[in-house]
Image (cartoon, rainbow, N blue to C red; front, side, top):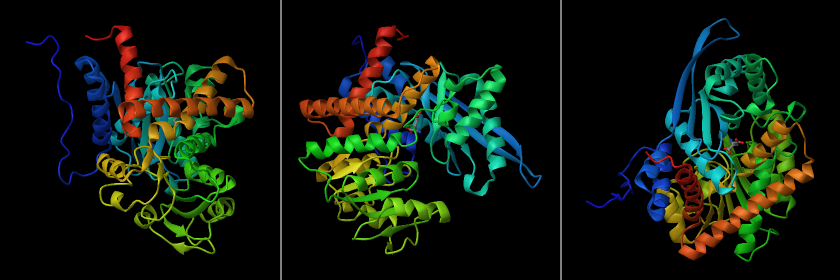
Length: 430
Ligand code: GLU
């Protein structure tokens, strides 16, 4: 018998399998695991989350009804530090999605070399149909339900889809009330006056911008006159839209959950934001035509930025992509099958675990500031963010060129390799 049974881990992709985020995350991990020829114990340890908690939370709604909500918190890894990752409120949340997102957080934190593992939480609810009071109660009860497994040195949540600085303030309060003292470092993405960091609100967009700057340079291009299409106009989509607009790009299309807009002349994201504040959507922005997600993905543009949810670029539409660069603002926006199609077409896909790591990087700076009760200026934060993002970009490009790998695979090799190395050094293999 060989002393170490090496297994070939690659799953076959079943025909017509329904989209399953954790399956996608596993496929991406397996490629890197194979490349790195991971020790079987390390492979098994990193393939599955360390912990999955499901909670059921009864809330009295404003009309007096008692409603039950289901929430999750998944910790994929705490090998390099506390689990780190957002909490989302969404009607489509599921345990598979949380497992995938927690796994991606582990790799994301490792790519930018933060002393964190990966986690993710969610509550199945429709935040657009709930009052502020209902959301506050739900957030506080959810925090108490997961309280035993979170903490500044255990697991540090942050905002994600449909949660924001206010949600984080409620979490900090519920946790602190239970501790008996204010503990701002339990959560990041808080309001600045409550221990939040300057620059955190725009951080994911700012990080995307630094990655795009490097990607354009790598291809010998510049910002001026580049056409951009953006899927999603939430925190991430709107931040990157403003930055690329200011840098001289022309945004020709944007979609959100209600529909989309197209204009060959360009869309001003600052004006659009004013409309979104009033109507809640990009739809019907003056001077634009309607467009749907698939048509946006197929547009003749230079840069495509998926900044919405998972699985939006799939085998059904990847073949239509004409962009030179895909900048993944969302987590898991491209399925594994779509990824191979894009690589074959020569599209430079800047993968989520690098591209959108700006948010968690500034979360790390917020956590450090909270622990030290010492705060940085916005310039200091941005400068540290830029260094981290550009260093990670270069490390990935070096691996990509050295081993002739697509950019995503190179990012995974870097991230999985870092976590595996730590596990090995800790002497954990059972
Ligand atoms: N939710 C964000 C992400 O997916 C931020 C996570 C964090 O700051 O911990 O990267």
